[in-house]
Image (cartoon, rainbow, N blue to C red; front, top):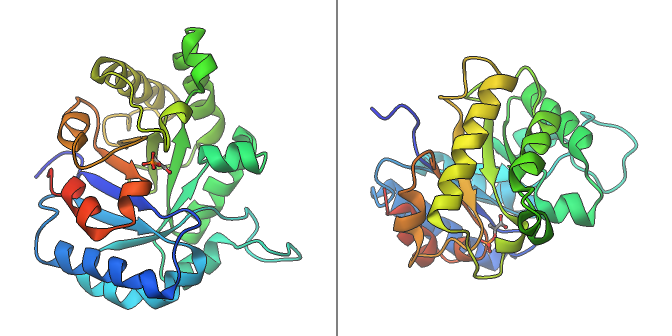
Length: 250
Ligand code: PEP
């Protein structure tokens, strides 16, 4: 048994109508048929599709996730969704602090930490995203930026079961660009060391995903990097063919 079970998670973002559930069902069928090998497969769907997708995911052993949550369990927060609601709909994961939420919805580290605490409270595993902008990388600040995002965004009570970190350089998301394998290795090593400072003793057990333009053609190289325990996949998770080609690396 591997010390950290690989995880390949899809982020459908704001894509997907009920007719698109056929792709989710194909992902479930392929996973049940063993096409993801050792890897755990998770799909983070729009909230409107969770309840419909839940039965197929459950029987195939595919995890279901939301893409954000509020920090309160319920209340007067029009348009929001709580971690408890995601759990009730069949989710076991939630993506938090994605760069599209950090920039488009003003979610700072403290807010991400409160949402991650809510995920813990509800019994969900939080996939907390961190990553530098292009300007920050060019200024040589990628490591400190990601370090402070980590320290600010991770609840102290996190465990290897309740927390996954996704390193997603903002400039690599949806652009077709990826960092060098050396840069990914250096960042993932840094993240693991930083987690071990923030959450003493569990740095080695927390799963670290790489995200940003992961495609079937580059997945073997990216997922082969030391300290990379899987991928968070955006665009290529929308079709079962591409997503399973990535998960099939394991
Ligand atoms: C993402 O949305 O988390 C992501 C990594 O997107 P893409 O794979 O399309 O770059």
